[in-house]
Amino acid sequence: MKKLKFLFFIIIFGCSTSELKQSNVEGYQNTSLIIKYFFQDIPVWANFSQTAQCRRTFRSKYFDFKKLEADTSFDYQKLVQFQYLYNIEYNRLLQSLGDDSPSVKEEENLFYDALANIRTGILPFNPPKFQRVNLIWIDPYLNDKKDFYKMIESDALILGHPVFLSLCLSNQEILDLIKKNDLANKDIRIISYEALSIFDVGLNSQNALRIDLNQFFEKNQKLIFYNLKDQIPNEFFGEFEIAK
Image 1 (spheres, helix red, strand yellow):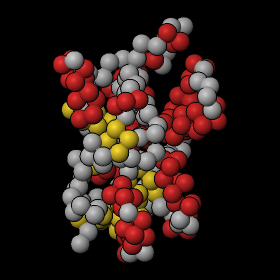
Image 2 (image 1 turned 90 degrees about the vertical axis):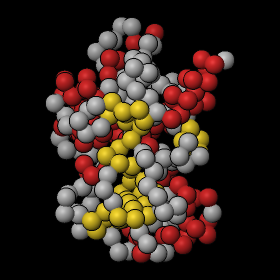
Image 3 (image 1 turned 60 degrees about the vertical axis):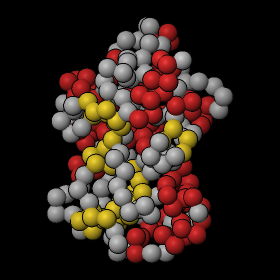
Image 4 (image 1 turned 180 degrees about the horizontal axis):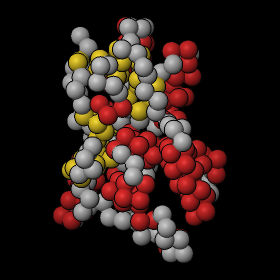
Protein backbone atom coordinates (compact mmCIF):
# COMPACT_ATOMS: atom_id res chain seq x y z
CA MET A 1 0.00 0.00 0.00
CA LYS A 2 2.86 2.43 0.81
CA LYS A 3 4.42 1.72 -2.57
CA LEU A 4 1.12 2.42 -4.33
CA LYS A 5 0.69 5.73 -2.50
CA PHE A 6 4.23 6.76 -3.46
CA LEU A 7 3.58 5.95 -7.11
CA PHE A 8 0.40 8.04 -7.00
CA PHE A 9 2.36 11.01 -5.58
CA ILE A 10 5.04 10.77 -8.26
CA ILE A 11 2.55 10.66 -11.13
CA ILE A 12 0.31 13.44 -9.84
CA PHE A 13 2.90 15.89 -8.54
CA GLY A 14 5.72 15.32 -11.00
CA CYS A 15 7.95 12.75 -12.58
CA SER A 16 11.68 12.63 -13.10
CA THR A 17 13.28 10.76 -15.97
CA SER A 18 14.03 7.90 -13.59
CA GLU A 19 10.34 7.45 -12.79
CA LEU A 20 9.01 7.94 -16.32
CA LYS A 21 10.11 4.53 -17.54
CA GLN A 22 10.20 3.58 -21.20
CA SER A 23 7.03 1.92 -22.48
CA ASN A 24 7.02 -1.85 -22.61
CA VAL A 25 4.13 -2.66 -24.90
CA GLU A 26 3.90 -6.11 -26.46
CA GLY A 27 2.44 -4.69 -29.65
CA TYR A 28 5.70 -2.87 -30.30
CA GLN A 29 7.95 -5.91 -30.09
CA ASN A 30 8.29 -6.03 -33.86
CA THR A 31 8.75 -2.29 -34.32
CA SER A 32 11.60 -0.96 -32.21
CA LEU A 33 12.18 2.22 -34.20
CA ILE A 34 9.89 4.62 -32.32
CA ILE A 35 9.06 3.00 -28.97
CA LYS A 36 12.34 4.22 -27.49
CA TYR A 37 11.07 7.80 -27.66
CA PHE A 38 7.92 7.17 -25.56
CA PHE A 39 7.60 7.35 -21.81
CA GLN A 40 5.13 5.02 -20.14
CA ASP A 41 1.50 6.14 -20.23
CA ILE A 42 0.03 7.67 -17.10
CA PRO A 43 -2.70 5.36 -15.69
CA VAL A 44 -6.30 6.43 -16.15
CA TRP A 45 -6.79 6.88 -12.40
CA ALA A 46 -3.81 9.26 -12.21
CA ASN A 47 -4.75 11.44 -15.17
CA PHE A 48 -5.48 14.39 -12.92
CA SER A 49 -4.28 17.99 -12.46
CA GLN A 50 -3.61 18.75 -8.82
CA THR A 51 -3.16 22.45 -9.60
CA ALA A 52 -6.49 22.85 -11.40
CA GLN A 53 -8.26 20.13 -9.42
CA CYS A 54 -9.67 18.44 -12.51
CA ARG A 55 -9.67 15.01 -14.13
CA ARG A 56 -8.61 14.91 -17.76
CA THR A 57 -10.50 12.95 -20.38
CA PHE A 58 -7.53 12.37 -22.69
CA ARG A 59 -4.28 10.73 -21.64
CA SER A 60 -1.42 12.63 -23.21
CA LYS A 61 1.61 10.85 -24.59
CA TYR A 62 4.98 11.97 -23.22
CA PHE A 63 8.24 11.77 -25.12
CA ASP A 64 11.90 11.53 -24.17
CA PHE A 65 13.12 14.86 -25.53
CA LYS A 66 16.77 13.97 -25.11
CA LYS A 67 16.50 10.96 -27.39
CA LEU A 68 14.37 12.86 -29.89
CA GLU A 69 16.83 15.76 -29.93
CA ALA A 70 19.74 13.40 -30.54
CA ASP A 71 18.05 11.95 -33.63
CA THR A 72 16.25 15.04 -34.97
CA SER A 73 18.34 18.03 -33.78
CA PHE A 74 15.07 19.72 -32.75
CA ASP A 75 15.43 22.46 -30.15
CA TYR A 76 13.17 22.71 -27.09
CA GLN A 77 10.43 24.63 -28.88
CA LYS A 78 10.23 22.16 -31.76
CA LEU A 79 10.26 19.18 -29.39
CA VAL A 80 7.30 20.65 -27.49
CA GLN A 81 5.53 21.38 -30.78
CA PHE A 82 6.15 17.79 -31.90
CA GLN A 83 4.71 16.26 -28.73
CA TYR A 84 1.76 18.66 -28.88
CA LEU A 85 1.02 17.85 -32.53
CA TYR A 86 1.34 14.11 -31.96
CA ASN A 87 -1.14 14.27 -29.08
CA ILE A 88 -3.63 16.36 -31.04
CA GLU A 89 -3.58 13.90 -33.93
CA TYR A 90 -3.56 10.89 -31.61
CA ASN A 91 -6.67 12.20 -29.84
CA ARG A 92 -8.40 12.67 -33.19
CA LEU A 93 -7.47 9.13 -34.19
CA LEU A 94 -8.92 7.74 -30.96
CA GLN A 95 -12.15 9.66 -31.53
CA SER A 96 -12.46 8.24 -35.04
CA LEU A 97 -11.87 4.66 -33.89
CA GLY A 98 -14.49 4.71 -31.13
CA ASP A 99 -14.00 1.63 -28.97
CA ASP A 100 -11.15 0.26 -31.09
CA SER A 101 -7.47 0.80 -30.32
CA PRO A 102 -5.07 2.23 -32.90
CA SER A 103 -2.76 -0.22 -34.58
CA VAL A 104 1.01 -0.03 -34.27
CA LYS A 105 1.13 1.05 -37.91
CA GLU A 106 -1.33 3.89 -37.31
CA GLU A 107 0.72 5.17 -34.39
CA GLU A 108 3.91 4.93 -36.45
CA ASN A 109 2.29 6.95 -39.22
CA LEU A 110 1.22 9.61 -36.70
CA PHE A 111 4.77 9.79 -35.37
CA TYR A 112 6.46 10.23 -38.74
CA ASP A 113 3.77 12.60 -40.04
CA ALA A 114 4.24 14.78 -36.96
CA LEU A 115 8.02 14.82 -37.49
CA ALA A 116 7.59 15.81 -41.13
CA ASN A 117 5.16 18.59 -40.25
CA ILE A 118 7.44 20.11 -37.62
CA ARG A 119 10.40 19.97 -40.00
CA THR A 120 8.43 21.84 -42.66
CA GLY A 121 7.09 24.44 -40.23
CA ILE A 122 3.54 23.13 -39.86
CA LEU A 123 3.05 23.77 -36.16
CA PRO A 124 0.13 23.11 -33.79
CA PHE A 125 0.83 26.39 -32.00
CA ASN A 126 1.58 29.46 -34.10
CA PRO A 127 2.57 32.34 -31.81
CA PRO A 128 0.70 35.58 -32.49
CA LYS A 129 2.80 38.51 -33.67
CA PHE A 130 0.97 41.18 -31.66
CA GLN A 131 3.04 43.31 -29.31
CA ARG A 132 0.76 42.34 -26.41
CA VAL A 133 -0.20 38.71 -25.84
CA ASN A 134 -2.84 37.80 -23.26
CA LEU A 135 -2.14 34.39 -21.73
CA ILE A 136 -5.45 33.29 -20.23
CA TRP A 137 -5.49 30.29 -17.87
CA ILE A 138 -9.08 29.34 -18.54
CA ASP A 139 -9.59 26.50 -16.04
CA PRO A 140 -10.61 28.69 -13.04
CA TYR A 141 -13.06 30.59 -15.25
CA LEU A 142 -14.87 27.37 -16.17
CA ASN A 143 -16.09 26.72 -12.63
CA ASP A 144 -18.76 29.39 -13.00
CA LYS A 145 -20.43 30.43 -16.26
CA LYS A 146 -20.68 34.01 -15.01
CA ASP A 147 -16.90 34.18 -14.56
CA PHE A 148 -16.33 32.74 -18.03
CA TYR A 149 -18.74 35.13 -19.75
CA LYS A 150 -17.26 38.06 -17.85
CA MET A 151 -13.78 37.07 -18.98
CA ILE A 152 -14.65 36.75 -22.68
CA GLU A 153 -16.31 40.15 -22.60
CA SER A 154 -13.35 41.81 -20.88
CA ASP A 155 -10.13 43.30 -22.24
CA ALA A 156 -8.58 39.81 -22.09
CA LEU A 157 -9.84 39.20 -25.64
CA ILE A 158 -9.58 42.82 -26.80
CA LEU A 159 -6.39 44.57 -25.68
CA GLY A 160 -4.02 41.84 -26.84
CA HIS A 161 -3.96 38.62 -28.83
CA PRO A 162 -5.60 35.91 -26.65
CA VAL A 163 -3.97 32.56 -25.95
CA PHE A 164 -6.01 30.03 -23.96
CA LEU A 165 -3.98 27.86 -21.55
CA SER A 166 -5.45 24.80 -19.88
CA LEU A 167 -4.35 22.07 -17.47
CA CYS A 168 -7.77 20.40 -17.73
CA LEU A 169 -8.99 20.54 -21.32
CA SER A 170 -7.39 18.98 -24.36
CA ASN A 171 -6.77 20.99 -27.51
CA GLN A 172 -9.94 19.58 -29.09
CA GLU A 173 -12.02 20.36 -26.01
CA ILE A 174 -10.85 23.97 -26.09
CA LEU A 175 -11.69 24.18 -29.79
CA ASP A 176 -15.18 22.90 -28.95
CA LEU A 177 -15.46 25.51 -26.18
CA ILE A 178 -14.46 28.28 -28.59
CA LYS A 179 -16.99 27.11 -31.18
CA LYS A 180 -19.79 26.73 -28.61
CA ASN A 181 -19.30 30.32 -27.43
CA ASP A 182 -19.01 31.84 -30.93
CA LEU A 183 -15.42 32.95 -30.36
CA ALA A 184 -13.91 31.75 -33.64
CA ASN A 185 -13.59 35.34 -34.89
CA LYS A 186 -11.24 36.15 -31.98
CA ASP A 187 -8.43 34.02 -33.47
CA ILE A 188 -7.69 32.46 -30.09
CA ARG A 189 -4.50 30.40 -29.96
CA ILE A 190 -4.32 27.32 -27.73
CA ILE A 191 -1.76 25.64 -25.47
CA SER A 192 -3.29 22.70 -23.61
CA TYR A 193 -1.78 20.19 -21.19
CA GLU A 194 -0.68 17.92 -24.06
CA ALA A 195 2.30 20.25 -24.53
CA LEU A 196 3.67 19.81 -20.99
CA SER A 197 6.85 17.81 -20.41
CA ILE A 198 9.38 17.06 -17.68
CA PHE A 199 12.16 18.82 -19.65
CA ASP A 200 13.34 22.42 -19.40
CA VAL A 201 14.78 24.48 -22.24
CA GLY A 202 18.20 22.90 -21.66
CA LEU A 203 16.60 19.44 -21.90
CA ASN A 204 17.31 18.77 -18.24
CA SER A 205 14.68 16.62 -16.55
CA GLN A 206 12.57 18.29 -13.85
CA ASN A 207 10.42 16.89 -11.04
CA ALA A 208 7.17 18.12 -12.59
CA LEU A 209 5.39 18.59 -15.91
CA ARG A 210 5.88 22.14 -17.18
CA ILE A 211 6.22 24.33 -20.26
CA ASP A 212 8.57 27.29 -20.75
CA LEU A 213 6.19 29.70 -22.47
CA ASN A 214 8.83 32.38 -23.07
CA GLN A 215 10.38 30.11 -25.70
CA PHE A 216 7.31 30.56 -27.93
CA PHE A 217 7.28 34.36 -28.06
CA GLU A 218 9.64 37.15 -29.06
CA LYS A 219 11.55 38.96 -26.31
CA ASN A 220 9.94 42.28 -27.22
CA GLN A 221 6.41 40.92 -26.80
CA LYS A 222 4.56 41.81 -23.62
CA LEU A 223 3.00 38.74 -21.99
CA ILE A 224 0.04 39.43 -19.71
CA PHE A 225 -1.20 36.52 -17.59
CA TYR A 226 -4.93 36.34 -16.77
CA ASN A 227 -6.11 34.18 -13.90
CA LEU A 228 -8.92 34.47 -11.37
CA LYS A 229 -6.56 33.39 -8.57
CA ASP A 230 -3.97 36.14 -9.16
CA GLN A 231 -1.16 33.65 -9.38
CA ILE A 232 0.71 31.74 -12.05
CA PRO A 233 0.63 27.93 -11.80
CA ASN A 234 4.06 26.31 -11.62
CA GLU A 235 3.25 24.41 -14.82
CA PHE A 236 3.54 27.66 -16.81
CA PHE A 237 7.15 28.78 -16.55
CA GLY A 238 8.30 32.18 -17.78
CA GLU A 239 8.33 35.92 -17.16
CA PHE A 240 4.85 37.45 -17.24
CA GLU A 241 2.92 40.38 -15.92
CA ILE A 242 -0.22 39.44 -13.99
CA ALA A 243 -3.30 41.26 -15.27
CA LYS A 244 -4.89 43.64 -12.78
